[in-house]
Length: 197
Image (tube, rainbow, N blue to C red; front, side):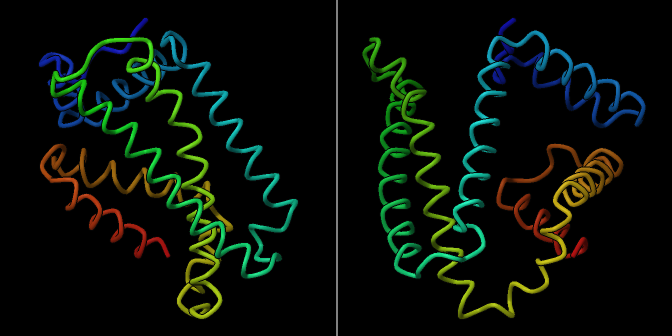
């Protein structure tokens, strides 16, 4: 089963109606959507493999000591420079192809259809490594600024579930679903993070 397009008016109206209705209806809607996307969506296996590969990468980086800051500063500098620059270049290339698709100025071919999907994993991994380098470069001189995040980082699942519960309360419980721009949502997300910490 292919996921319905987000531009379909019926598809766009259903989540809003469910999220702004009674809480039990919102939970039932989310459970049904999750079940359908997990069991019937044709890309589920790809997403599972993607998540598994990123977890394995994280475990490898941990075993190598890169996550703990156990490698020389020059390694993090190289990660930041190469990872961010190459990752941004690859992601920009893929985004350009995607924009041409939306804009209608593209020639359908195997390359233009498959290339964004092929470019996504290496661009993502490079960006993740670049962010890892940037984080460790900033962490050394500004260790005190990161201290509030230490305990929160050790409770990642609790933080994720708590963030989800607070967001559900704000957006579904208070009837604020689809009322904010993306920039506003970043501020609200940061506020929830501060409350949790």
